[in-house]
Image (cartoon, rainbow, N blue to C red; front, side, top):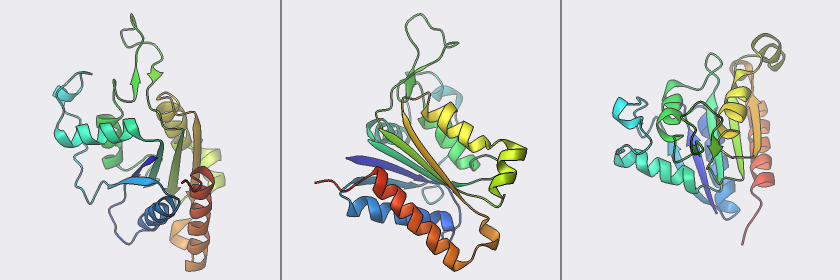
Length: 199
């Protein structure tokens, strides 16, 4: 089984990187093939160019690869910080260029694009791990948790992924090494629960 793992954080020593490495280790230990992409390390170009917008556009080789991987993934895991209630721009650009018509969703015949799309992704679950410097209670009360809406409803829900799990770790700036170790053990448990040992 294939799992697509996308990481979006520029700092190699970040807790986001530690999360991603924990995910990779657990998935491989449990017998999964991992397609891991560190978008900053790969210098992913987040700009959606006009010529790429049409569904049947000729895409750059690297974008076609990302599209194939996300289309064929049995599971998807995204790791990123909460920046202003949004993913980093590089990840938003990945969404714009890869979660595209004909790959992640389609419109029914006769629908010119104003209706609700039909999801095409075959992944049985999507997991999002976030870090934050906002207390959970304030995130909910003041901002309404925009990342939950974005990932669960606006992206994966519309693209056919029926099961969704998200965990946010914070407050990062005041967290201790012991607390971060506890969070990483939680990541390991979550991944093991949703991707149990195969073979």
